[in-house]
Structure formats: structure tokens, C-alpha cells
Image 1 (cartoon, rainbow over the protein chains, first blue to last red):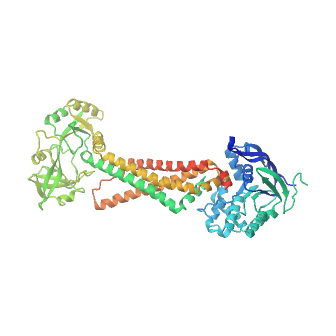
Image 2: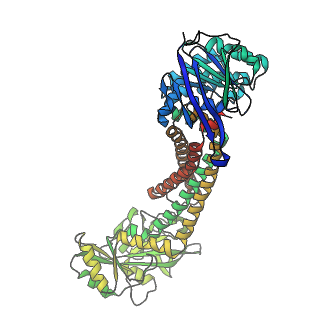
Image 3: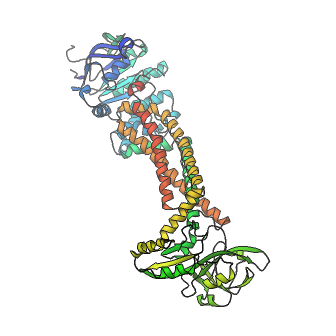
Length: 240
Length: 378
């Protein structure tokens, strides 16, 4: 029986005020569990990224709460949320956002450096995770020398280097061809999904739905449903 | 924090084109600022050369004197009156004037002639050749071996030439702390011989050199001299008066100030623009760092570190370049009047700090306003 990793309740977010006010996310509640790969899908403008930004402590909701491992993150101060993100969450951005002037290894080590870890120690751990994503022989190269798929694996290595419990991937297959996208998701599921980790993925790509345990569907800022997916139901609390 | 600074350092220096542009901007600005102010310092130092070289504690002069080179002769009784002031240990006259020397090859060379008190030779230069007593010998003069020495055809002991149609015989070669401003050789002789060789007005003493009994007597002496209608200044006051004249009354100070400000603006423009571009290009990456969990103060620290590192490196290079340029100039012009002083490099440092501060302020503002959400939604 898996524990709850993320519990969102009544999440609401609007932008602008008065006549220009736009409701981006309306009263979304859900739970994500450790050992689960949860997809968030929906058309552009459906509020997926806004919702996940609130869940990950990046965007403050107008209403609702987010609990990660029992901590109501929006009760924390700005610095505390930053520290919380640094230690508990790993991000793979759609555009990767790797530093072109740093080596691949240094890029991967950044979260550890931000945790004020010793430089050599951080580099050693970065190399360890580059091995996990199969890029240890690219450690000294700058990211611009790598292919798109390799850059994404570097971004994944950076996301997991501090061993976060929650891993968030934003459109991980958007820049990849079909085969590479499936390979990456297969790798993520096989190598990164553990009983102590919850992976949340924002995607449009139906070709990778088979790797999900559950899929959250969003439309017009509302959660329209949660379905079981290709990877099959998982044993979660209250869902047997 | 060390690791964060290391990341900041690598982000900066690995972008070689921008780092080079930043360094060029700062280095060039520092070079110009220090070069300008060094020239000014050199000119000011040279302008007070006589005051420094003679070394008297107090100088009595006509109140209208602006610089040491343009003395206004005083009547002899002033010397007697000064000597009678309580607190004066001793007082001696000094003659300072210019004359034309006719050299052996028939050419003329303007020289400065210093006439030292016959009894004491107070203010005499340190001799590197010859005997000081020979200055009392017939036509005896001491020549100063400085950058202008060669203009008198490198005289030796015994060399003779004409000075205002009088015979001059070099009896000693001396050296002084500072060369003069005007590129003219300097001769020392006795006060009375100077009066014989150089045409004079009714009054003859250019300055009266005074040694107070105690430091506190200087104010009393200055008051008494003032009551006589003359001016008594300490050595430092006289140097300041000369510096003020060149700074404020000749346009030299204004021009140097303008050049320094222009250098500052050039440096600020180049480095500010380049640093801003550098920050803009990395803005999304800084946003990504924020999303990952970097705190705003850590990002600010990174930017400040980058700005400070660039500024200090450029500052060092600018000073080095200036020193090399002065050295090179002196190979060609031995009397090149530029001197790097601590106030100069302090001023340049302050300006570089302002350049770095303004450049990084723009970057910091940008980085602080970037929202991780903007990065997340792409």
C-alpha cells in the first residue's frame, strides 16, 4: 500500500484582476502516490503547467493547499519553499535549461552545489548519475555538443542528483522523435521510479501513455477525470 | 557558497567573447583614468620640485606668488624682520631665476639658477661628484644630473660655458629628489653669485627659507609675516598652493577631470552593456536555477561575484597596462611626468566599483524579477 506523496486540495489560480481576470485552474484536488507515475494531460491552455507549478511550490495559488509528505508547502516562507524544492523535488524542463558554458557534469551537479555540498563530492555524485543515464563518457563536454536526447538525459540526471522524492517532467518527449521518446520514458520508468519516488509528467504525447499508472485529464483549468493507464493500476491507499 | 561562486566564475569566463569584452571595457577605462590622473600627479609633483628639493620647513614670499617658478622678489629688510621674529631658529634667502647658457657648440639653453645662502648653503643638493666647498671658487656652479642634464652637453667637473655672458665653471654634479616641470637644466650657486650673473630688480630675495624653533612656532611666524604684508607657508601648504594653481587656474585640472569622467563613461558603457547582455542571455538559466531551488540572494551573490571578479581583473590589468605605458614612455622621454600614486589608484578603484555596481544592479534587477513559473511554462 503506497503512501501519499502529494495531496492537492481545491487548487485555484487566476491571473489579472477585474475584467481581465482569467481563471487558469479551478478547484483541482488530487493525490499522487509514491511508486506512481502520474501523467497530467490536456490541451494547450488547460492549466496543466499552472497546476503543477502550484504543486511544486513555484506559483502561489489563490486558493487551495498543497501537501508534500505532509508539509503544507504554501505555509512555508519563500526561502523555505526554495530549500524544500531543492531537496524534495526534481525538475526536467521542457527546454532542459542546461548551462551551455558549463560541462555536462557541472550542469548535473548544480542542485548539489546549491545545497552547498563540497565541489568534488558534488562532481562525483553527478558522474554517478551520468552513468545512470548512460552519459558518463560525455561528462566533460558542454551540453551544446550533445544531441537532443542526450541533453534530455542530462536534464534528467540533474533532476535526480539530489535524490528527490518527487520528480516532475514537463513535456519530456516534445523535442524527441517517437522512438527516442519511448526509450526515454521506458528508462525513466525502469530506472527512476521507486517505492520512495513519485513521478509526475505533463505531456500531450499519447504514444507514451502506456508507461503511466494513472492519467489526470484537465480541460479549461478543471480536472475532468483520472484514469488508469497502460502500466496498470497500482496498489495505493484507499484504492484497492 | 564557494561552489556557487565557482559556478558563477565558470559561467563568466567560459563565455570568452563576453568576458573579453568586459575586461577590455574595464581595463581600458582604468588605463585611461589612471593614465590621466598619473599625468596630473606627475605635473603637480614636478611643479613643486623646487619646494621639495630645497626642503625648507617654511617659505616666506610675496602674497601674489602663484607657483614657485614665478617668484616676486622681496626687499632685504624682510629677511632681517623675519630673523627677528621670536620662534625663528634661522632664516636664509633663496634666489630662484632663469638665464641663458651659451654652450660650447654655440647653442643656447635656458637654465634655472638657484642661489643658495652664501653662509649656510641651505638647500644644497646632494653631490655625486665634486666638493661642495668649490662652489665658493671663482665662477663655481653645481649642475643637477637629472633628465635635463644632457641638454648642457653632459658636463663634467671643469666644464665651462657662458651664462648671461659670464663664465661658468662646473665644480660639482648633484642630484635632487624631483625633476622640474619645464624640462630645463638646473644650476646651483651661491646667492651673491646668482645676483651677479642674473639681471635683477631693486629687490633680490626670491624666497626666505625659515626653520621654526618648534612646530608650534610655525603659526606664530605665519601671523607675524602676514602682519608684515607677506606670506609664510609651510612646505606642505606651499605645495598645496601650487597644486591648487595648476588645478583650478590653468584649466589643467578641468581637462584631466573631463578625461577621467569620459574614461569612466566609456568603461561604464562597454562593461554595463556587455554585462547586461550577459545577464539577459543567461536569464532563463537563472530562472531555472530559481525553479530548482536557488534563493534570490544566492543568485544576487553570483552576479555580484561575476561583476566584482571582472572589475578587479580589469582593474589590475588597467593598472599594469598604465605602468607598462609609463615605463615605455620613459624609455623614449626620460623626463615623462607621470606618476602612479595611491590616491590615483584609489580613485580608479572607486570608479571601477561604481561601474561594477551599476552594471550588476541592472543584472540583479532582471534576475530578481524573473519568475520561475515563466521558465516552467516555457
